[in-house]
Amino acid sequence: MLLRDELAAEPLARVDYAELVDPVRFQPPGRLAVLAVQIGSTRLIDNHLLGETFQSAPTG
Image 1 (tube, rainbow, N blue to C red):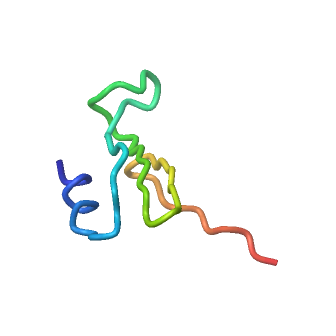
Image 2: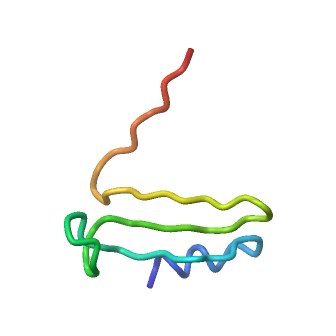
């Protein structure tokens, strides 16, 4: 899986999970990327609907 391959290329990353799931059923296959990755003592948890643009964080 391309998502896992990209994460595996990062030597500091330990992947807890990385999947492409259906955004309604949360079952593969789908286009919602969900992942949890440990980098050092920090656990990153995120999701993104593929095909959608990323929203900028508010500033100020």
